[in-house]
Length: 66
Image 1 (cartoon, rainbow, N blue to C red):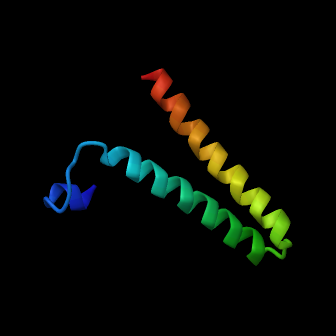
Image 2 (cartoon, rainbow, N blue to C red; image 1 turned 90 degrees about the vertical axis):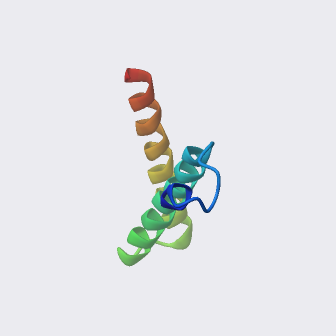
């Protein structure tokens, strides 16, 4: 969003890019945290996916309540 504000790219539709990046970050941080806690790769990926799904659910509920 900062890049759009600086004129590096169009601001139309940038919220979708930010939403996608945030979802990938949730997945990545969930996997990293789970691996650091000693989980196997399979379990870590499931936990990361669950984190990403919860993030999407929070954004959806927030949108519906506004």
